[in-house]
Length: 333
Image (cartoon, rainbow, N blue to C red; front, side, top):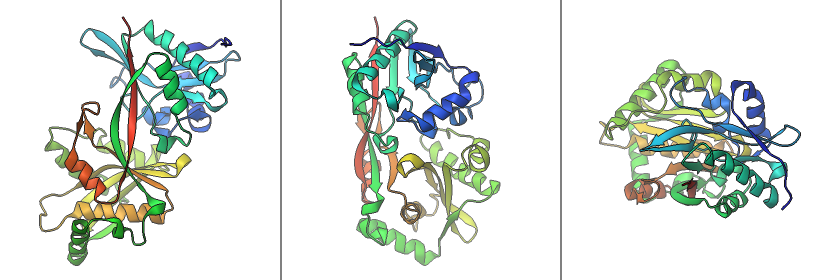
């Protein structure tokens, strides 16, 4: 195998602009979720950043790897950045050839082995990457990485009928009819007060499971007005002026995909299902805007070992299909 000299540089703020330009313009599997523009919304001290860049012989970026340093028992672990859904090794398209990717993975592996006891790389979903990551997956396997899978679901919006509810099961359509008879309306959230109302709904929903929202209300408002104006949508369902359900959507422009994030409802209204109406109107809005794919996220827990069948059945009742998120891991002696 031809030997190309790659060097590894820990990430510092001086690389912020070049990192983001690389992720969005050159990287296989790169999305806004791996940019510093997104990752830096987290306050200093929330995570121990361990991201790094791999440079070629001309000192150009050949790959980047967003990640954090954590501990598991007595082991020091490198994990794909905990502030994002995806991390992975993001390689330059010009190096996305078997020989080069094998070299890049080898360089990464050597670097991590010297500093950590274990590594976990959560790769970008193929639906967002625009290019199959099968080559990278094989090269990771070649270098001794194992993987686990989590079951995800999505809608092929181009294949949905018009109107979209014809793809839904009978119970969902009955709920939609009830909501329309009650006079529920659907619209974009347009004010800080409405974002606050959405965050309150989300907080109440998560309390049932002993969880808290990942994003603070101020962080979400920053997404809407500043940091992620192009990449986010916020929708709500209202009865007159009372918010009944709401959610945030992430937009992946490279692959014309949109992802439903944190859809929540006021479950005190048991006579009809505002969350069903929100799902319906979000799907309709995404199709009307011309998106190709709408993803719902995973329905599995414990690294894919358990499946939440009620959650999956709910997603399937809207006509959803299936794909997987894949995480590669390796331990060193």
